[in-house]
Length: 122
Image (cartoon, rainbow, N blue to C red; front, side, top):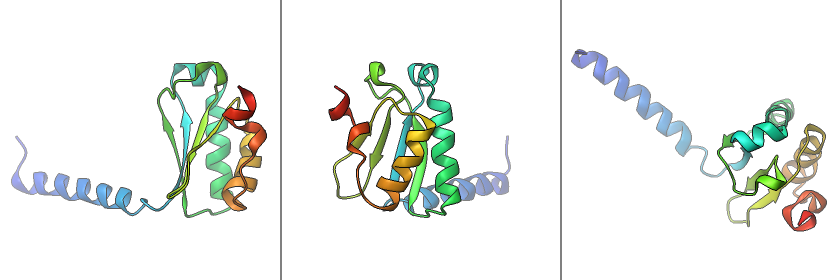
């Protein structure tokens, strides 16, 4: 059994993690589909490209994360970009090279790369 001090330390660490997440509410979220279908289609290098490029450009308002199956396996690797107050953008058949362009055009300059979206590929 843990002591009261150990339990309080666990609680404090958990609260700190929640506060970090709450501080990201206004961030742009980049969600890379990393279910089995996404990984098999090459999502891991796409995720790495997004993480590396966002870090390189020091985009503090962008959070890159992975998610499970987005539900359109035939279009994997799939990336969703969620910006507060805007419609979600779904990019499909992504590659690391396409990820670099999405960071530059969409995340930095605010222009959706239409030819990589679900609408252009269905």
